[in-house]
Every structure is written in structure tokens, then in C-alpha cells.
Amino acid sequence: MYIGILGAGTMGNGIAHVFAQYNHKVILVDVNEEALKKALNTIKSNLNRQFQKKVIIESDVNKIMNNIITSIDINEFKNCDLVIEAIKEDLILKESIFKKLDSICKTKCILASNTSSISINSLADSTNRSDKVIGMHFMNPVPIMKLVEIIKGKNTSKDTLDIILNISNDLNKIPIECNDSPGFVSNRILMPMINEAAYCLYEDVADASSIDTIMKLGMGHPMGPLKLADLIGIDVCVYILNVLFSELNDVKYRPCDILVNMIENNKLGKKTGEGFYKYEL
Image (cartoon, rainbow, N blue to C red; front, side, top):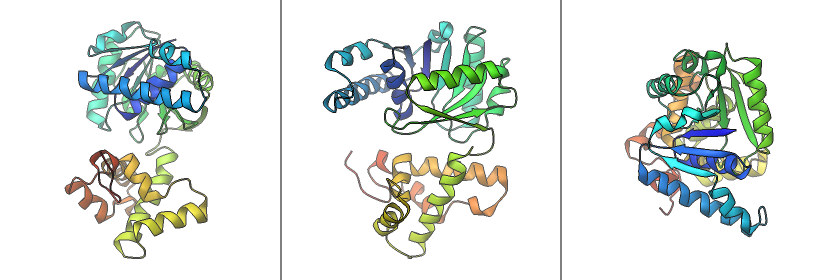
């Protein structure tokens, strides 16, 4: 399949990496040429890391890189069989993008979103191909994490679902289906945990390191919730919590004040160098 990926950020370049690694031709599109250059450098670096760990052989690195081309022109998606949108979480922006993709892409092309919370039905309603719209929620870091949360819209066809399940398996991922609902399964469960961990810190129950260590050692989590929030991005966590709060009308999803204050102070986590912890940029 010829794969289009819109957005060259952390998720977009990770998705491009795995598709290229499994012999798909990929066109990676972003409005920012510097973002595209950074994405290619990141992919090359991650491939070299895979080589060092003997996941791939040395000759695979250039072969995989040659499967990826980049562009700043969204019209390059016109011949794709599948386009995956991986831009920031913004409903209005995503709806406008899906409308644009619908006008560009060939009739049989499947349009997927890597959204972590936005309604697949809303995105599908922006197109004239709602049967070919689906969610493919990859986990970060994409080359390592096995899960792909597959979100079915109300009109997603069985053919579309089967194609996406098959291609996810071909990527050596484990696709798990769910229906469209705020936050789907992963973030409907994860975000309240992160929020409650923030409340534990806010109410001085324990410091950040202690909260994370208790969850790692006691619950078997590979990473504590506050460290994970830093990796995801505090702004993204708050956005998803607000979606859940708005759509489900339940106060348990209201973001903790400490999270809101961190955004106001640009402490967004790893990407800004400081969140619950400090990082080198």
C-alpha cells in the first residue's frame, strides 16, 4: 500500500518509521520543511538504534529511509491508498483537514486519524466517505509500542475495518477494536489516573517521584503517571481531560489545578524541558 502521513511530529514520524520498516512506500507531509528534516533525522537515529540492538541489519537502514519521501504539499496524497492524519488535537482543524483530504484523495483511499480523543464520527461527517474513515491510535513511542487502538465510527465499513486490522498486523502491531466514544478506551482510563496522580501531588500526599515509584512497583506500570504525563505533554493531557469533561459531563474528568497552572507557565513536560520533572532539550 502507498501510505500518506500528515504531520511530521513525534507521532507522525514514528508512524512513518514503522510503515517504511515494513516495506510500505510512505509520503510524509507537513507544512514546515524544518519539521520534515527533523523527522527524517529522528527516524534515521531510531533506525540506527534498532541496528545497534540487532532488531534490523545495517543494510536495512538505508532501505527503510528510501521508502520515505517528504513534501509540504498535501496534494501529494492524491494516489495514496491510506492517509493517516497525525496533527495536533484540534477538532476544527482536523475537520477541515479531513474535508480537504476527501477532495484530494482517490475514492478508494481510507482516511484514518491518530487522534487520542476526538470523535471519529465528527471527522467522518466532514467527508463524503464516512464508510472509509477510522481511528488508528498508535502509542508513543510508535516503533516500540505494540498496541494500535482501532476506533470504529458509526458508518465505518467492515471492509475498511478489515483492511486496517490486517495492515496493523503486518506492522507487527496488535490492533484492538473499540467504538467511537470520548477518549475511546485508552485515554478514558489513563487520563483520570494521571489527573488523580496530579491531585496527590497537589494535596501533598507525596512528591512526584514517590507517586510514580509507588505506581511502578505496586501496580507493575513501566512508567509512573506523572512521568508519562510529561512524555505525552501536559497540554495534551489537559486537552483530553477537557474533552472527557465536556462530552461526559462528569466532574471526575475536570483537570487538576496543578495541570492547568503548568500550562500557564509553559511547563508542558519533556518537549519544553520541564513538567513534573526537568529534562535536557
